[in-house]
Image 1: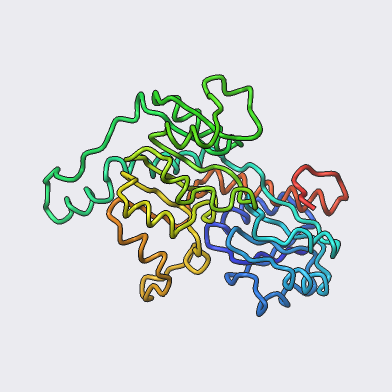
Image 2: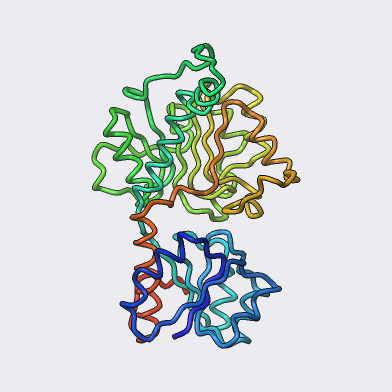
Length: 328
């Protein structure tokens, strides 16, 4: 079985090459470039392609993959909103993902963003480097005794709930599926979550129902001084409405590991470029906003789990065995 990896970074290649020798009959070639209309034909002669979270696998790409004989699309991530699943099913291409690699990795990054914006770590770091040891403008709040509102109680959301409970926060959650293994969580409506949360963290998938789940109407229902964190998918938040909310002084802090229109930036070094995307520039202009580059997954444990699950998916497909991770 031959697999072509698109959009691979050094840490991807290193984690996969560590375990490749355990998978007889599977060979891998790595490309730095992402899949696109220009690069899709490089898949000719391969049984599968492997893409990541920023790869746009639309109907045109899938049609050309099918023409090239590709039978399997491997996602080395949990989300799959970037793949046209209906088209893949129509073309007879199986799509498999990594539903759980290290939920704690993302949850811990979400809390790190919350801590950082709350205690103004980003501002304090810069001030001290410039020999400014004033504490003016650095006041935060104690999280202990405050309320964490978590939207989405899947693996990552559950991990976030456990961490918040562990530091003494009251935890409320909104999810259509209620998990019985989180006895300290109280499930509430979205409106109640917005009204009562001091910290709101997003951990739900991006669907037509959750698209812009955080809009101006939702923001207006939130407490003044709320902290908002998103480590899931950028389009869960309507960016224009978020900017309006920031200008209304609704938020004491916003931590974003994902944001709308991040595709051109995510995982890329653009330090010598002029940011043409005004959304990114505007977000970076606010002193109470921290933006990171979709790095919530980036721990050694998560990379190892992603590599193992991805290659196990490929192995199961090769052997014709049933597998839980197939989407279509």
